[in-house]
Image (tube, rainbow, N blue to C red; front, side, top):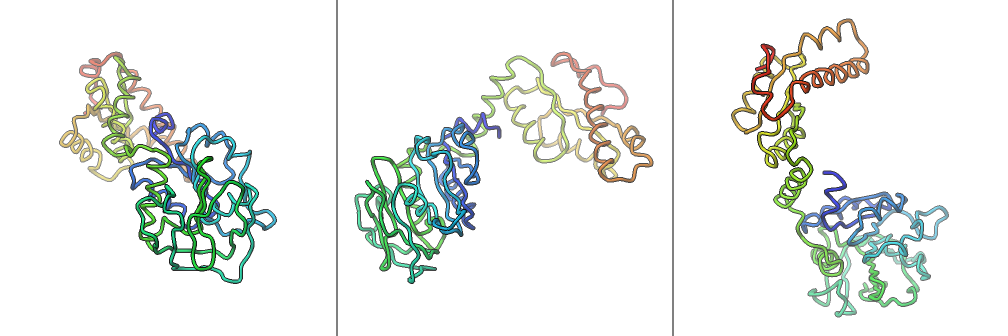
Length: 336
């Protein structure tokens, strides 16, 4: 999917500070039918802003925020994004120091299961949750002084474990809501993504297909389209979406390079004809490919030759298309 298409959906951006759970955060958000995208913590701010994020999540990470060279936010990010922000673990501590609070090491490190007490039931992050929940922690540093304007919203027996600044839309948790060991963590992420950020849960297969088809139809209008089919999943899905949008105005070209298994070319052509409505034209060009590869032993040179010959064959075949009907009568004996 292109960035242009993604921009149609509410998007949560995750900045990765090296956590082993970053991909899991993304999975949980996508399970809520909301699109998200992961960037390294030091990605250019323009990459984040061009998505116009509905929400921003700062992941955990192995560093200590007070270490020399520890990863930090860049380019006054908090001042530039116009959306709610959630810091998780290291992200929680990073929000603290970025905004004037203090983080220090502790002798009572928290690794593993803990009982979390929600001290502010009015917090939108913990809406609908009981007073106490199970949580999974992995840290040796603690927030010891809150930034100005923040209030503590949850804690364990050892330390403050969540805070918020409602006026600025900033939230942080020391524990990991994305892991299975925090059973109600998905509800916390749901509260942040759907309620606080206001993201629409419409990133579903059916909506993606509908939006892509409409975008293709709008772009193509009354023009004809030709598609190079490889026989693989990606090109077949792309061709199917275009076919759904414009029907027979698309023609597909499938090239026999002479490098497939015996009978595979015919088998793929038959599968296309049997199970799809695609207008597929098979082109036998095996001799051309094998001739170009004769005597070549270097694998990288072979790859370049195959790519170049494929382009030449496809361009030759594309020349037969002038309007949607041209391909019906202009195919010679090398086409099936």
